[in-house]
Image 1 (cartoon, rainbow, N blue to C red):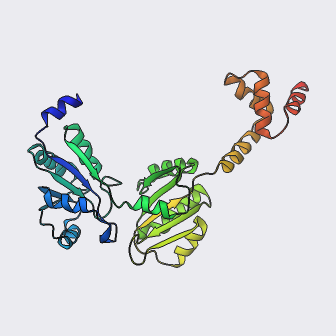
Image 2 (cartoon, rainbow, N blue to C red; image 1 turned 180 degrees about the vertical axis):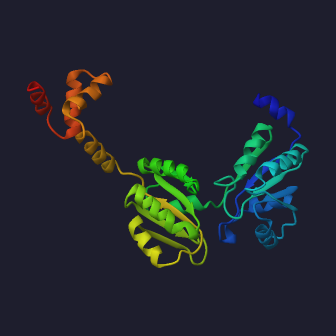
Image 3 (cartoon, rainbow, N blue to C red; image 1 turned 60 degrees about the vertical axis):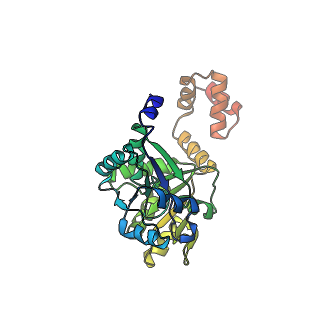
Length: 290
């Protein structure tokens, strides 16, 4: 199926995902500049914002808007242009297209239509913030903006509470205090690094805790767009919670749990003893009295 689509669209153009600077214009790559000059159309999140970038690098290519509110119908238009052999570059206001961005819709539609998509790497706020955070970078996940729907947000926060990887979120200044409050109430007092004005003159990187960040921004007005890098649940925290959960069970119920999982009695006693921080003999002696 994939091969047939590629043959059918061998005369189609290419969609280029072009990363643009998140603050410092010097972070654009030469490859992106050359591509923006050579394509037939630039699809931009906000043409009023992007024209400043194009003018700075003397790029004359015509633009069309592509944003959250026209992503379906405009994607169809761009697919038509690509199918007719025109090359299209997709850019956002800042950073890498399709990351917490309507560009993902266009990419999906291009792949379904057998149109080639390629990415020109460059600036990305979430990765920049992660590397500056001082938190673990070995395992991480990107959440983007929390959902606006209350029920969905509650479900996401419940998932994040159990997340052991470093978490990356975006937030606007006028919602920052609310989000910090919700994170604190759901996750407890975790370490967090707040990043703003990344790559700009007044770049700010604040390693702190959720409680201290909340106290700070209840007194000081947040300014600029924020990237929040939050530590995941530690192994020790998970062990403590598991220990507390076993304390709500009787030893008989605890044994039954592992036996129902298929463990033999001896192995179940060993695991129960380990969970409760006691010896296997103590569990054995207790069960003898019952």
